[in-house]
Amino acid sequence: MMKKVTGATSLTSLKGGVLDLFRLSLYRNAIFLMLNSAMYALTGFFFWIVAARLYPAAVVGIASSVLAAIGLLSMLSTLGLDYGLLRFLPAAGDKAGEMINTCFTIGGGITIIAALVYMAGLRIWSPALIPIRDNLLYFGAFVIFAFANTMQTFNSQCFIAARQSRFAMIQGWIIALLRFIPLVLLAKAYQNFGIVSAWGLCLILSVIIALTFFQPIAYHGHRPTPSIKKEVIGRMLRFSFANYVGNILWAIPSLTLPILVVNRMGAEQNAYYYIGWAIAGMVFMIPTSISLAMMAEASYAEDRLVIEMKRSLKLIFLLLIPIIIALVLLGRTFLQFFGKAYAGNALQLLWILIVAAIPLSLNYVYFTMRRVEKQMQSVILLSAVIAGGTLIGSYFLLPEMGIKGAGIAFLCSQGAVALYTLPYLWRRLFRKNVEGPASVH
Image 1 (cartoon, rainbow, N blue to C red):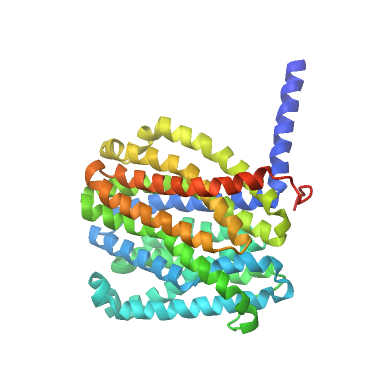
Image 2: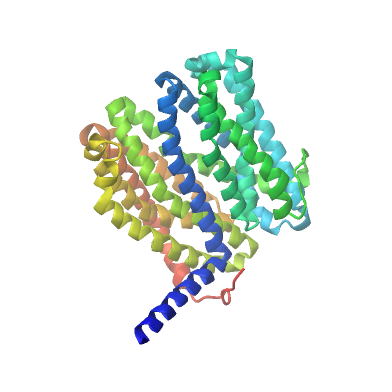
C-alpha cells in the first residue's frame, strides 16, 4: 500500500511540476512555437508525398520553385520589421496599434512591389516560371500569396511579443492541416497551379482568422488598418535594418548550400543532402523557438535578461541532448523510411549537423541577448563569419568528402563563433544576479 501511495504522490508531483513549468510564459510560448514548427514540418513531408502522387513531377518541381520564391520575396520584404515588432511591441503601450499598422503597411506594400518586379523579370532569373506570369489568374494569385505570407510573418511576431504564441501556433496549424483539402480538390481543375494554390488559400484563411479574431484578443480590440506613422517607425528602423542584414546572412547557408551541392556533387547527392538538412532543421527549431520567446520576455523588462537567458538555456539543452542521443543511435533507422540509399548516404551528414546544434544554440541565445541590448554589430559580423565559413569550407570540402563536407563546414563555422560567444554567456550566467528574484508571468 505504501508503494502505491508513494507512486501516486510522485505522479501528482510530476504533474504539478509540469503545470508549474507551463505557467512560465517563456516556456509556454516556446512550447507553442515548437509545436507549430513540428506540425508544419511533419505535415509538410506528407503534403509533398500526396502532391507527388496527384500531380506530374514537372508540376511538383515548378510548385516547389514558386513556393521558394514566395518565401524569399517575403523574407526580403520585411526589412527586419518582424524583429522590430518583437523587440519594441512589448514596451509600446498605447502606441502598439500604430506600430502594427505601420509595419504591416510598409512590409505588405514592399512585398507587392517585389512580387511584381520578380514576375516582370522572370525571363532573366527564372524562365521556367514564365507560363505562370502569362496566366492572369496565376499571376494575381502569386502576388496575393506573397503578400499574405508577409502578413502571416508579422502576425506571428505580434503574437509572440504579446506572449500569445498559441495564436501563432493555431495560425500555423490551419495551414499545415487544411492544405491537404484543396491539394486534392484542385488536382484536376487547376493542376498546373494546384499545389501552390492549396498552400496559398489556406495561408490567406489563416491570415484572415488571425486579423479578425486573434489580433483583437492579443491587442485589446485592435484590427490592423493601412497607415504609416513616421514617429512610431523611426526608432525601429536602425534596429530592424540591422536585423534584416543579420537574418539574410544567417539564412544564406540554408538558401545557397543546395545550389552549391547540386553543382559540385550532382542532383542525387543533393537529394541526400536535402533530407539530412531537413531532419537537422527540425532539431534547430528548438533553439530558434525558445530564443524568440526569450526575446519577447526580455523585451518587457531588460533587467530580467539574464534570468530569461538561464531559463532558455536550461530548456534548450533539456530537450536537445536527448534528441541528439536518439538520432545518433536511431538515425540510420529513421533515414531508412526514405530509402536505403538515404540511410547509406545521409547518415554521417545528419550526425554532424545535429552535433552542430549545440554551438548553434549557444550562438542563437547570444544573438538574442545582443538584440535585446540593441547591440547589433556583433550579430551581423558573426552571422557573416558563419555564412562565409560554411560556404567557403563547403566549396573545398565537398569534392574531397562528399556531402558530409558541407556538414563539417557548418559545424566548424558554428563552433568557431561559439568559442567567441561562450565566454560572454558564461560571464552573464555566473555573474552575481542583480536582476532580482524570478517571477511567473
